[in-house]
Image (cartoon, rainbow, N blue to C red; front, side, top):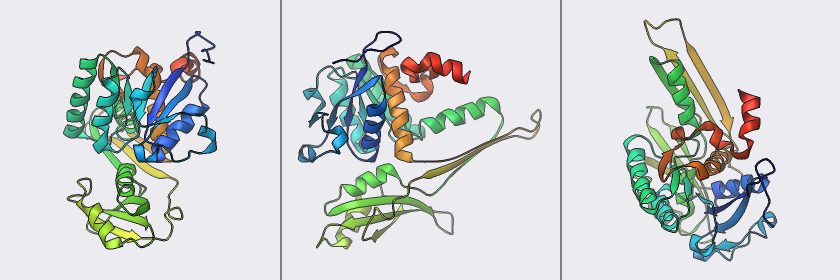
Length: 311
């Protein structure tokens, strides 16, 4: 039975989830606990459709393509960045709005947004791009800091933690049972990728390492691959960031804004993606960045309560 929005009498949003890695699972958990949303289906690769899901998702349909699920109000694309455009095209051409969280910045992000925008306009449906932690939530903080302190310096310091998209790629290498990728800073200041892999019995770690380093995601980066007995034992629960904005010389007053956080990267990304999905019904066709979306729209049916609580 379709549950109704108690305030406005609107039906709950039916969301599909493409991909069931860390972010996909986190998105499913967030949607499942929401009163105004439901998981319409989980879309997995054909070779993984038959794999069992946790008991809590036992009643959720598992399919190999979004076209198999009619009537979805939106889809959360929880796949590696390299696969996002193709996945978005599959959804948009069937008239299904999408939310994605590709980790792209600067010119790469603008090019990605323009490509998604052409598809979304062509098929007359909305899409929200870069709706993760960074870009996404951290972009909103940076923008607000810039408004409050227009002239000054912004310094962002990331704490060591798992890189979701690099980890997802490493997990797809043949012979890899589980993987975890982190970013370290060497003594000379250069960035290094540390990839911890748990391989299947009999697999040559050297071949796995070569395959990881050859992937475009790792090109032009120093990548160190370490075999481990258990990735689960190494899994880091949190990620961290420090954002500091200081007013420049000659500014009126001495302004200093400081934001520090530690969090679970996958869960933060999932919460932003799910919030963005609530805003989809009110958006025009085309690709929208998170900074383009009204904050109230991200709350969905809770907008009135949020306004009373936070304003």
